[in-house]
Amino acid sequence: MPENHCTGNIFIAKRTKSLHGNGVAELEGIQMERPMGTVLYREEQYFAPWVRWGFPIAIGGCAFAVLAEAWLSKKIFSTEVLVTVVGLGVVAYALAHGFRLETEVRANNVRVRLRPFPWVPIRRENVVAIRAVQYRPVLDYGGWGIRIGYKRRAYNARGNLGVRIDYADGSHILIGSQSPQRLAEAIAQTFGMTPILEVPQQP
Image (cartoon, rainbow, N blue to C red; front, side, top):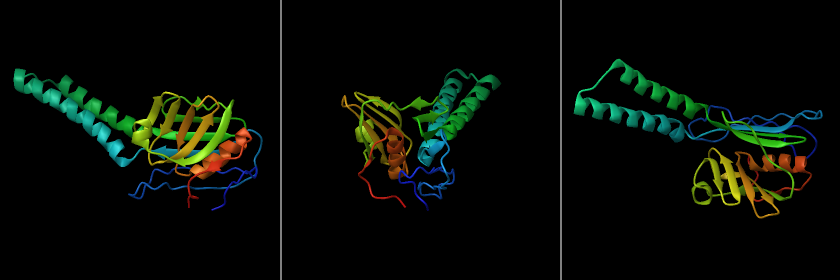
């Protein structure tokens, strides 16, 4: 697969929805000449299957438990209650399967979002380092999703690899990625810096 090593080409990586049962990212890359303002790098990541199925099952289970308790204790049951329970399960399923992490690097900006939420721009002022890193999602950030702590913020969907952007005030932003070296190189190209690659080259 061709790679973009700050050559002025575009590298687009897309996380396909087919996970082949092992959660390994499937990336498709192409290179082309870079017109001004076009995308240098793009990546989509879906949450792990246990998250996409566990969330709606948990919501549906809670709703069913409430319904069962109401029926057993007061013999209350109606079509409206049943429709509400089923509706909650459907909404939870749609949300869990619609959530995904999207990262986009352009020649003049970097942004990330947990879809369907809005894009969040990554500021380039006072950046001191861009690192491709391996991290501990639960211990370092409390899990996956949008994680906000003291002087740290993380956007991740799965795995334990990503790009950490360090700022002069000691704060940092972590963006999860299945191809952290390529993402770090693209961000560094946009910010006019040299990335620090602390993880092995991904195939």
